[in-house]
Length: 294
Length: 294
Image (tube, rainbow over all chains, first blue to last red; front, side, top):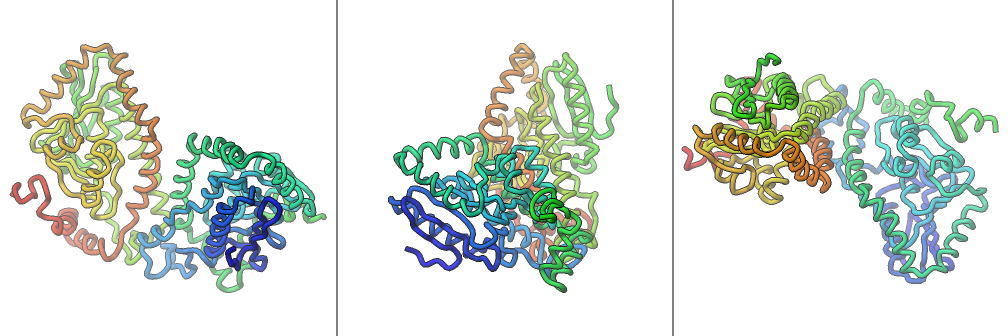
């Protein structure tokens, strides 16, 4: 069994519970965390006793998204109006964002069901990770959003695949928060359960899956996942990946500079307040009008 | 009949000859010229007497490619974008331009319901090679030279090269911008036939007259079987991705590679720019700049 630092790997009856375990950073997805997640999946692949994976997050978030401090090309000492770091060329900047990220597609193509147990904040790439799981159960306190689009970043085609064109655009263009019920309505999740029932519900599904022969489960997974790939999902994700380059390098001075300055001079909270303030109240979740009343 | 400034439109022998007519600049493809080409094709589409289009260039050359004379802005190094501009502005502009001036027009010609026959003599470079190769048939004069020298100063290739010449041949020439003569073009599959220069148009119209013997509806369907088949196999998606990657390629100017050329352009105009860019590649493997050619 692997020696993990940023995740927990707990084998139970018939399944394994993988917990993203960086609660101090709301389980932000660092490169090292992603690597460990893949090592854990390697382990699951080899272990015949494991019939399914339950994926969740430690603490008050499923995941806050990509670790902002851990990205290539993300330098904050920019020269304006160019919107690039000193000494950087467009060639280097574009190349640094062109990392071909098949990391999440592996979850999609995995031969055993991966069940997302979505608790609390599920933002940005954290929402993508949640959506790439095969079956997704949300706690009542789950909040999905892609606030990073507000400072220059891309959405994922998985939102369009699951929520449909109009719903995906409604939230992908604004980064607006949605709560578990809205996520259920638009098709991002299978079911919403109380927080203390979240893992039970997931294990309950695993137990039912475990009654079906593993080879049959694998084939039926493939019929759904590969069918959508044949219909063009893989191509869409490929284009998605390339479009993430312009979305990250195209920075407007009047929108980005105040954010970078706030972050450099006053820290992350000031940065988030400046970025998200104009969007509040959110339509759903704890930052909505209703949420504040609670 | 519309009046054109940058092209000639001459009906003859069951078809129409459309001539790119800016011989003083080797028929460089300005936006205005491309607009007129679209209008002329629209006119020919509606004219039932016209069974096919022959597309050629005035003054013995097909075309030198994209008109680079419009943008004379100095570049800021190491950023590699025009002084006092910004990456967000340049990137967005280039992506829009590529889609509107290039991809949409290319798809319009590709989907054209009557055969378009490229009649290529002399220089056929860069974007003009894409224009010539995207024609449904392409006939070359024995002095034709194809090449994509623009990739030497940061620009993309076009997937049509891969479709026609195959993977290895396309890469051989698109990674270097090396010149290809008519015989090599024939060997690679870029052209249908090589004919003596003074017979080029005659040969093309002989073909038009043969097409005119077949019912127009049958010709249309048979065009579509080839074209739509390639689209079903993913050509349209490849072009969509191509367009995004071209925008990236155009932005990847690096001090180490591009500064010399840009300096030459500031001092001595486009001629000096081209000389600085192409000299290290001589002799070319084929054509008038090859050892044999000299």
